[in-house]
Length: 160
Image (cartoon, rainbow, N blue to C red; front, top):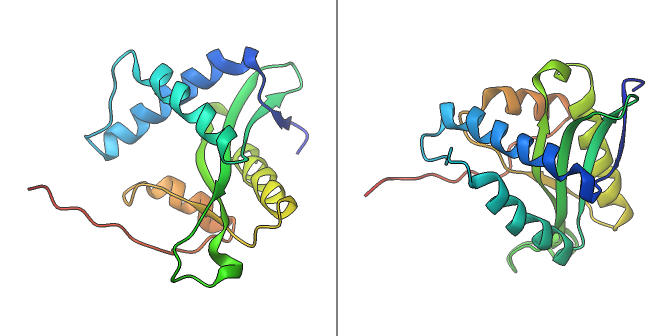
């Protein structure tokens, strides 16, 4: 992809990442009304996520245009599986965050971020990468389907 390159996030990427977190909250808020849309959510999520990713041998990646503008990000880390899963498949990568600015969607930026996360997982000796998404997030489901991801587990909810 000529439009941008994928690199590890730096401290000076934080303002862009905070905007991405909030933009994703807004997008998901249309699908799922339990999403917070207050002014503190991005900073709080960032403050929790960054050390969590580090503690789980993960990486924060960004997609950067040639002009230096960051247009997307991904957070990936190692996760463990339950004992009822075969040992060789228990440990896996988990792509926890993926966001691309609207103007760059469909241009391969998201796919490049996914590919970088897959390469990271392979480099760690992991045999699979899992991605969580909201059940009604059809646009994300299409992106992952095009990248050869298949449904694995389903969580259901009932408000009491």
